[in-house]
Length: 437
Ligand SMILES: Nc1nc2c(ncn2[C@@H]2O[C@H](COP(=O)(O)OP(=O)(O)OP(=O)(O)O)[C@@H](O)[C@H]2O)c(=O)[nH]1
Ligand SMILES: [Mg+2]
Image (cartoon, rainbow, N blue to C red; front, side, top):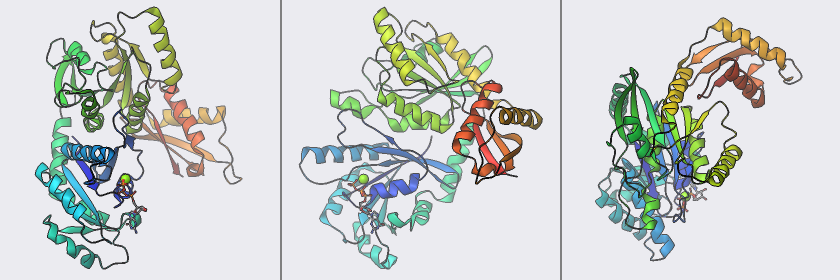
């Protein structure tokens, strides 16, 4: 599982600026469940090949204002889900009583806390940090988030080399069994655990009608027609007490961890509701991860024709961008469509791992170019010469040519689509990379 780092602190100390620095190129997932007045952001960062999840939180205050209290509660929840905490303070202001109050709140949660002193540009970093030893949180790490200063040293402290190595070794050990790792992903209460049970054919995962009943993500081995799988069931964490809490228990962290551990994501949508924005956002994250994908529209039983038609319309309007992705209407409860779903999972996995010869990829490149000539780049004709495999799961195709690097994204997308079709790759994205040659 990817390690999780939460960024917390007073308002305006630079938490989001640090978050943006850490997650740089990757899009963040913003949670917008009802009841969350202030968005939490989730993103992915990498240190020396160790990917980890970063959570940005709203500024914590001691005020009794309802909104402020909600933000503070959410920050504390983020800490609950985190392995490490970055407590950010403003180095220009010295230690304030608010900072001290936050420390008193987060220390009892017993997570490793790293004291980050921000906005130290133009100051003597050591001097700027000295005042903060008094907090009793150990060494302060001076940074300037807006300028990217001090961040490598901070990360080295958060994840020392030996810890990185042991996390990676544990991950590698888990992947060694060569099973198809299948993550069931979707909003709360769409039927992920019911589907897991159905696939397993036994009641092994606790199912409950209230969202967020499953305690943790679970890895469950499965054999089907001689093939080995590991099912990864995600879901919320605790039982609901009231409606507001439900929204808090769905765990985006667990979802992101499951996506990252998987080869194939089985994305579950509640067929009794239209495709929601949250479905689309989660789907976007799956697509960006480069994992193979199969979509299940669940609860397709006992529905009126009219309700079915409404959902079909919503699906065709909102999911049309999922070309070359299999989509199946199923009932996890009754089992209809579930066998087919697993065939699609196999197909997606095979597609993602297919291997192709350089000569074949080059031949297809020539045909693609003949069908649609690359545009002029800086007034010159681009000459694409050959293509070869650059990796699989997801398949990467490296195209060499003079001026190739300067081709517009639209042409790369055209090539990716062309390869997708001609190589008959279903359920997996194809990445095309350009190399100057
Ligand atoms: N001088 C300086 N300003 C910074 C630095 N990092 C962030 N800031 C500024 O501090 C202000 C607040 O930054 P944010 O990242 O939004 O702070 P935040 O902690 O996320 O704020 P809330 O989410 O509202 O609690 C912005 O104007 C930033 O440009 C820094 O390293 N140096
Ligand atoms: Mg912020």
